[in-house]
Length: 308
Length: 318
Image 1 (cartoon, helix red, strand yellow):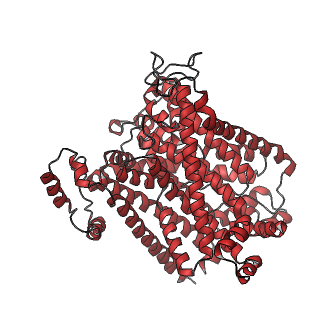
Image 2: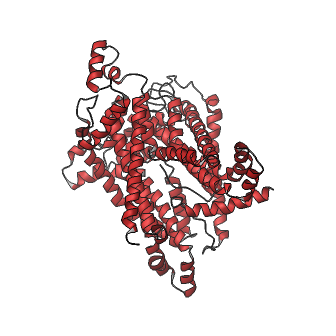
Image 3: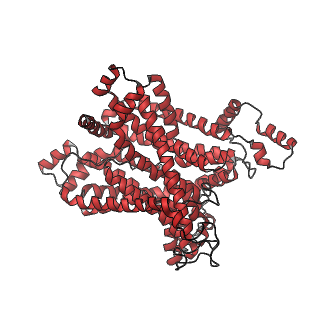
């Protein structure tokens, strides 16, 4: 049973990718000129690098605040923009607070918010993507039009417009990210589901008189879950970049709370002295997103380099 | 067959216009569904009720949302975008002052990044699976995920702090020589180029490899056509459309990228104007800037679509 499910998925996946001009793929059916053997160890290496970086930041987000040597808001040093020392491993910030403690706490905001927003985007996008295939035609078109409109608003624009109207808050930032990134998830899962819905076993289930939710959950979902999860990983990276960008502009997470983007912003004054307080959080975000990107790319060769 | 083309272009154009119209509805809805009152916000908490009422009248806030939306929309046609709430100047004038700066930044970035990205994509595709390709793959894959402010802070750290070649902040007003020009634009352009080149090179490589995998290239290979000729004479002409599509789509990254870059380098462009407007909750200015960015984005996506369609005879005649 599981084999018959997996097979069509793979074939559908390939034709799907070819059909859409925007999704760039480098998978080939022809043998490539260099021996495939030579590529293998390198790919594995990238996967391990990605997994290590990404896993590290997930662990920091989970346990970091417990390990922080000082409270996040405590003024612990006289020196501002202090360098590395035994007492302050990552130096001190513009107000003499311990950078390590602030980053351990900030990482939880950056990773946590992005995970929540990515989960919600995929849930909304993929949920609608699957269900609309089974809905009447006019309703499907209506939902598609709405998502097509939302996808035409760049994510930073959406976030800026929403913040200008409602002021910034954590639920609003998550909402802005979901409104920006659910349409993409919808588009991909909708086209996957459209192809799956034409297959015999779905037709059989329909003829059998199964309900829409049963068909979506039992017949369609298992065959597209892998692509949907990969897509969610990409969305996680985009959302980290969006939210830390907003925080960097001063329009994201507000003090006293701080994510890694806010940490870059508040210490930007130390840049001209090359302060560790501004480099460290910026590098932290970079290693998180690079790690996640390497991991996702090596897990699936169908990658979407589009960045909106 | 020839007559199909203008029709197709017109079709795409009208569909983009429809999307832009829907986008304007969304933007207006978000910015007008305020729980608070714009007039109250402009005047602050200590305004008297009379002042608020007068300003409400002046701003036309007593009219129904539909009427206000109509006025706002027709304002775009006549160039009357309303008044900026934070500094009392017409929105159109504020934007006019800033727009050329942003366009210049975008133009320089494009002029530098496109040739580099195309070369990188071409080389990677030709040396597919080789060391160069693998190295470029790792580099570009990492670069597309890097936040702009990391590139910017590292660039400032290296070129301004350690080497002292460049100033950390840009001020366009002080351009007097070519040297000034380079010093001001070097770092903003470098920052934008990093991510843009990586993305464009990846998409170019993918577009070209798509062609290299097709049957006619295998045929050429079997006939003994040398690799360079195979790529440049056989594959490249057919990949022009997909590559143009990739370039246009990549350029849409600039719309998000400039927001961070203009802010970090204090560059007086339209994106930093918008960020200030958002901080000041200057809604008329935010709306106009958002429409400008969304319009530019839609144009780029439309150009990308048209490039893909016009270069593909099968799509063209559909």
